[in-house]
Amino acid sequence: MYTENRFICIIIYIYTACHIDTIYLLKKFFTMKNYSYRRFIILTAPRSGSNLLSYLLHSHTSIVSIGEPYCIETIWGRPAKEYMDQNFIFKVLRDTAPGIFLRIALFHRYPENIAAVGFRIFYHHLDHFVGVRDILKSDTAIRVIHLKRRNLLENYVSLVIAHKTNTWSSLSPAQDQVPRFTLSSKECKEYFQYIKRSDDLYSKMFHHHSCLTVYYEDLLYRQKDECDRMLKFLNVNRQELSCKLIKQNTRKPEDVIINYKDLKKGFLGTQWECLFA
Image (cartoon, rainbow, N blue to C red; front, side, top):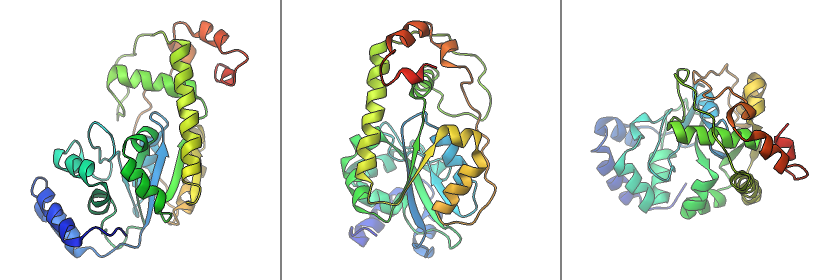
């Protein structure tokens, strides 16, 4: 694993535990012996199905799937580590000592039945946390599930809606539909280019790792097959996986974007034309 001084790790861990659940965390650190599980990351962009994928994997009895520990504004640990959600102490530790945080808060000891442990990390998280990016890049034992979304227009529409509603996942259907809105061709193009550039950059960066590409559309419509592929990739036994999250937006882009026809016309003859079917 990583080479930070063990004594410093323990002191920081105890300090952190005092602000959460001391008995539980100390027991976990000192009594659990399992370091032999497979470590993985879910590399993706926002609104690409990462919540769905994470909850599916966490429903497996031998997988721990952590939320977004490198969310820039705060920390999200659910589904696996709900106690970590928006915890200030964990955030300070993460921001000041990313290697120690990775070891004692994410890739620590687990019960013997746990075969795989991982977390979600977005392209812009890696852009921001350079130290974490370097650690993940250098540790080629970490497996990478690269989750992508084929239709970047639907991806961007979903992102805009999430920002407008401040709702990023839900166990119940939305009460009200978001009013239709206008998008400029400039902001769409910039988003498409950023995702394409980030995809290329991080695909190359992690090319020495064991990688599996999963598409959101396949996960949505061929869920069992895709889940079986991921379980095989993580070398864990097959189980039926489940997720209770509800898809937030079921409308097509043309039903949400007021100026959809103008956008479609503006992207004719470009590499993004196929997004406006």
